[in-house]
Length: 287
Image (spheres, rainbow, N blue to C red):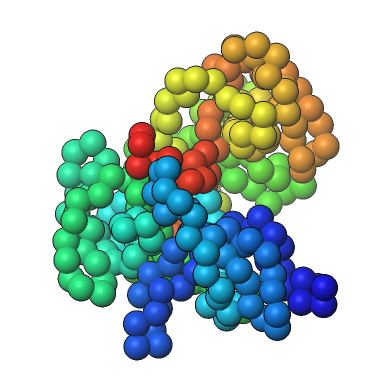
């Protein structure tokens, strides 16, 4: 079929469909492509709620987008631009209050209504622009470090791609920071190495994310080796305490104990972002 060649949305693709009011997008609803049909239209299925019957609808491709990046933050901040999962769709709004147990007050942009939502049913806002995802800016100021702050440092030097080295800020030097490393040593191999680091190569120490049930194959992790944390992927589970890790940047594979691994997360836009294991938003509601 000629139409199927023109659309990137093949049968079975998970997508999101725009809810329109006065020609403006007010929400995005998860759906699955049932099949491409004439011209630029798709037959889609909405899996509304657990155990509900599927609802079918014909949608023009201009009102469809891929599912946003499967990522979430360690915690949200007041005034964050987010989307909350309500009434089977993702609705834009803002965080107005932070509560215990990863619960937040979410104010819907469309109605101004406020509801309390768990973190599992919130996500950062992304816009689909020019066939790529762009995260909505959160208006966060640059991270400031002071003497005594625990940090991690990266390097552009060959052979250090994907590695972060732990240290402590000694002092700020203009827009840079003097850092003393925990494990890296000076030329005498005794004195802790100190370096002046630019803002683009320094981040806070990541939060300790509990690993209660171990890791699974394809989980993205950091492995502690060669005095630093190196990003890799679980390629094989040897037992509940030992894993084989593949380092894509170096095309190498090594064995590690559970205590040598941590869940991978990235410092993006002034907050910690990590990959979600939950894909289905209705599954998140059951946690």
